[in-house]
Image 1 (cartoon, helix red, strand yellow):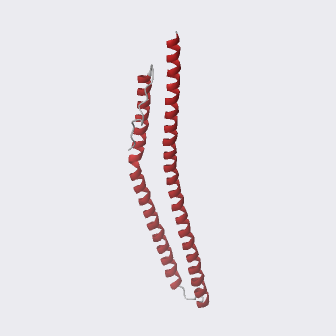
Image 2 (cartoon, rainbow, N blue to C red):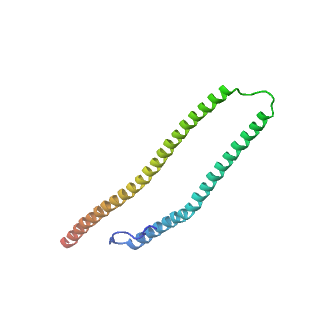
Image 3 (spheres, rainbow, N blue to C red):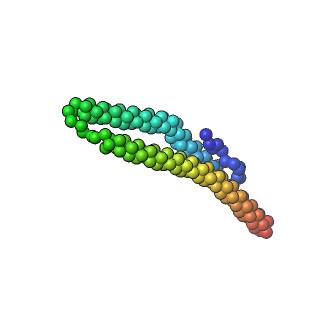
Length: 159
């Protein structure tokens, strides 16, 4: 959960209460919306995981059933569909292609994980940058307010 209180209490002049209330309400409402979105995230992740699991199970079942039907059909034919030399070559090439695909999938999976990790790090960097910019802007606003207040007091004392 995000702390919704400001880091610095900045005293301002007329209308500061209304501005503070407006800003606090806007902050609280935005944080509340983000928190509500975050509540659903675990359900989304679980639903996606379940969908992936069901997809893999359906794909495996489809492959097994299709091959089973083809194997049964081939065994019922009275003449050879594939000669032994072609069968051996097919098995060899099929295994090579499968190994290449598996290696490519492993590399792709690692690249995807690395990209997601990099995106997460970018969000952490972005968050630190926002904190730094906010700190700088707060310091600049305080300095400006001090300068304006000093000028106003000089003006009031000279009259």
